[in-house]
Amino acid sequence: MVPPMHRDPVLRLLEEYRGHHPGEAATVERTLDLVRAHEDCLRRTCLPGHLTGSAWVVSDDRESVLLTHHRKLGRWLQVGGHADGDPDLLAVALREAREESGLERLVPWRPAAGAVRLLDLDVHPIPAHGGEPAHDHHDLRFLLLAEPGQALRMSEESIDLRWVPVRDLRAFADEESLLRMAAKAAALFARV
Image 1 (tube, rainbow, N blue to C red):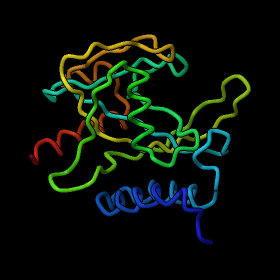
Image 2: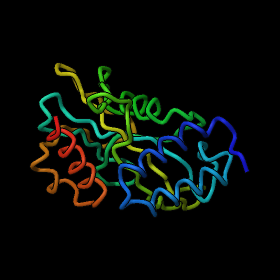
Image 3: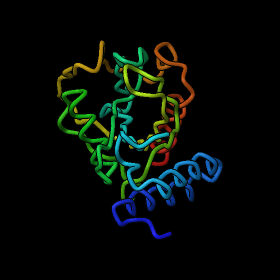
């Protein structure tokens, strides 16, 4: 079966990610299966799960990361949200980061001579809430650098928003996926 073209950008991102992170092949395959099987994978109505885009936002000095204390989930997380039909998950991550933080000047991390790549891929369960059944988020995560001199502005989705020094990250969250993003970002920065 040939997937509709609107899913091609996502498929390319995932295939490239698998090439850079062969140890995460099972997670990549799970998400590829969703994208191939569900034409509506970019919409929140797609069950058992759908694609989301999020941002690991790092301060200009690379010492701190932006975390939001999510109102509905009650946990410290990176900023991000639903694709709502947009196949450009980087654009989704940028839009959500701006909406949830008030930061306007965000720059996607690019390898020395390349296009923007995924920083991380995570599949995680979202509990049932209100009339929404439990489902999975297949979260495509990008590394963004915040230009200095910007004030934070919290959205209604959060009960707190702050810059957290990377060295203090474990005091806010011990979730494996957040620690994994921090480690991946640090490794990228060390290569420069």
